[in-house]
Image 1 (tube, rainbow, N blue to C red):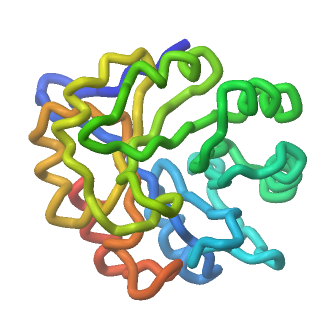
Image 2: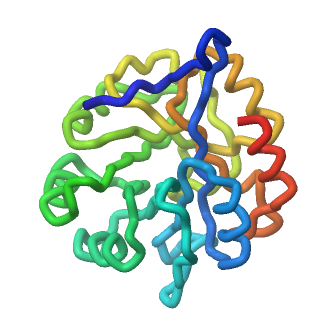
Length: 220
């Protein structure tokens, strides 16, 4: 069943967005952020990323109400499955060039209750028709800024591009979102299911600024 990308405060007309804090890797930092009970926490399992959790990463105890997302880039299905089992992940975010065929094959090996988020680099000439083959095998899309690398640029894309999105899946909005952008998003017509924040809330790659994260919690 496709989940609604929006919900409203009863009788208030207030848009409620879910929030994902991505790029976490330090135990104390993770525990502090987990105590604020955001909807999603993201952990990067891509060795070339500055926010790669590392091979010896130990997942702190996190409330079952928070969904743990593993971020992968063109990874072998067996590697993804290993991390799902080891860290009890609730979702996988595929942030590379994964094809519909790859995802269909991956779904055969991972538990049925694992959500799949497929990320795409959005640009002015983005062709939304290419999303169609993914709609039946993914749970969500994620739109990030298109770069030569795989995300983590800290730059925004032109959100007006998303006015052309008429797909059936809810989406995460990512790419250089900072504290000053939250109200803009809430007051826009973008209708994201969730926002995905990372570099604009950091002291250094992988280490989040707790004071900024507290401000974010107040706003969302």
